[in-house]
Image (cartoon, rainbow, N blue to C red; front, side, top):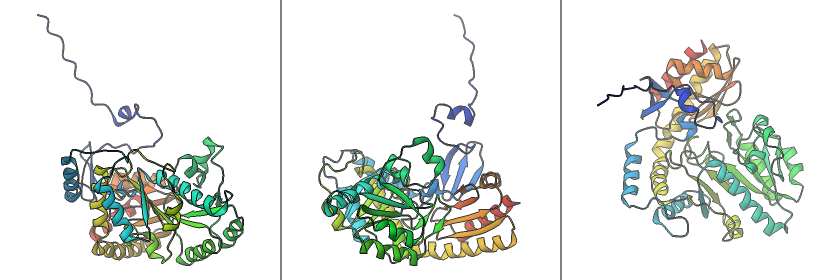
Length: 402
């Protein structure tokens, strides 16, 4: 009997592993294998304090016992998916909870933030057609906004490098300056159906839109019978210290889009609409094979209930204000920091060096942070992050600046 030699396969590098994936992401050079609380652990054994939350998704951190229990309970039903041809209790319960806690009368579920915004565009155009005789279809987005990378949402996203390779973009969508005078002139066209804004522009540099600006915009849209969409995909569901970001401003929109943290890491988006918008939507106008399925909806209901907790929201407001003070103090003593902006657990730091370089230095120091443009750092810690952990993160940022 011939004995064949045993060949030991080498462990592939992170780069080798990624070659099978379409290279649309510039991934960090680490492989994440485990998470606990606010920390992530790499295949190399290193531990990282996470101020990314999976780009705002993991609001309750990692290895959360409640999310795990909700998922186990959903699995035990034996029904992960039915399609929307059938009624299921979990999706209904989640929709009722969102309606009860918000301005909305109805909810549509999908799988992502970009899908939520695409669906919102369809709904407001359907409404505009009903009240405007077919001419009311245009959508206005704001300078600095980011609403997704599907065709309609890409046309509403102010990132030239994302837009240029895919022209011509979807028609009937334009970008305006963050100026009420210009917006008023654009809305004087009877063809405008809606304006979409992020109450806090995340990808666009963490720019907090002032309540006075949003109030003025709400007044303009009401005067001209234009729908107001708040994109809360990144800034909603507790991130600002309010369950919905619109609650911080006392400005109530006609549509809110949600996604990132809604299902605790599982893919889910939602569109919340007023009775007026809902009345225009008819069977067949839109759909989603997976949206609001029983497994994801069960977990999302648990997460939503947790994020609705007044005590959690109060801690985010209080600790977020404290974090802002620490970051402004950092800016005062470090000439590399030009400006600090943010609210709650969403902060941007303008720096004089390329932001990517500082992100890499922070990673070496054991902290994971993001960029929001070439010269802006973005902090999105899980909403369970303690004040002590926030202080540790600020210390590591200062070390990275050095």
